[in-house]
Image 1 (cartoon, each protein chain N blue to C red):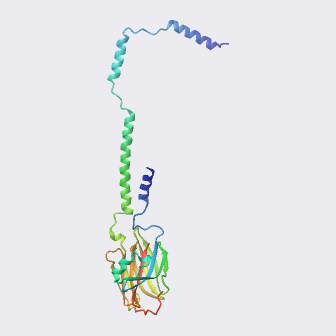
Image 2: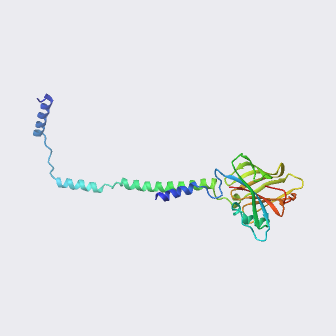
Image 3: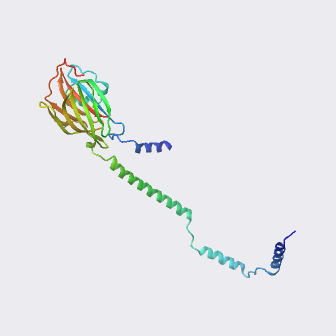
Length: 145
Length: 131
């Protein structure tokens, strides 16, 4: 009986999936996508995203060139530097129950390439198609986790 | 040694015993039967315990209903019954900051994610490090 009561209380107190909670973080990564004769193993931190990336961009092999995580909260402004060459400036403009409104600036060294305002829901990434590098394509991924 | 009051009280009691006697009932059985009959004819009072229990049950049920209603109201305002778009990412605005770049956006197919498609970025030779 006590366990059932505890379960009921837990049900009402735990936030449903997709609803952000204190301690959310923004994860940024730089990924190299290539086409290989035989697909290479997917890096651990890209396992969940790999099917979507392959489907959107049409490559079969992914390499993680760098990744970074930062705390996310209303009014925060963070540099997210997955690599020295490419990095982001992320500012949290507003916060709703299921998403964050972010102003994201993508830099290559000192040059600002793209500015975007995007509403990012939890576990719903933003993919940015970057330049071609060697025989592959650079892809930037931002996700609230 | 008895006090004066106690002596007086004992004297009064014995005088009362002598001179005061309860009147005898001539038809004791009749009176008794009339009293019993009168008692039986009186409407039975409701039992307070039963009323209290029923009242408690109803008030409990009503409280549960009110609590459920309020919970549904609060949850609907703060949490739920949201559409899928509330759990999807979307690009509100995007602009290229270099003249050779252009950007467009679209929802990731079958996903909650969103894609920002940047065109026109210069090719980076493999010899150049991007790490």
